[in-house]
Length: 128
Image 1 (spheres, one colour):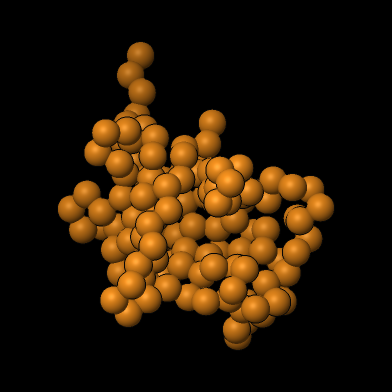
Image 2: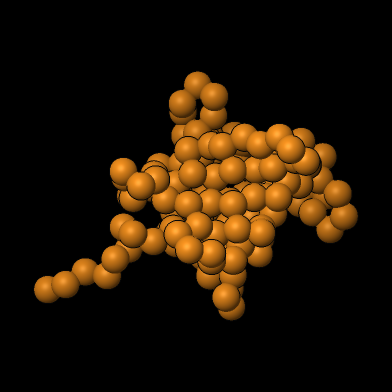
């Protein structure tokens, strides 16, 4: 029996951790056309599941964070997905973003958000 190269692919569910290293949400990355998108699949703390994006602008303002499409329009370029955007639901700020699998461990996803010349890279673990 052969298995698809799911472990080599960014599509799937990923654990987003807070600064203390605790999992605070599961992000589901999926394909829409030729682009990748990501949404908040599950907020871990039951008491936070009904939180709204009060800081978001436009149509996302006051929408539930759980289920929110926070990553949009990532296009494949080599081993990376680039030219997308990601929203931080805590601040409502939107950043340019790119994602890629860690070369050493395909169960680790690097998520980088850019604001002008500054960037921050987060590490997400593949969720089981």
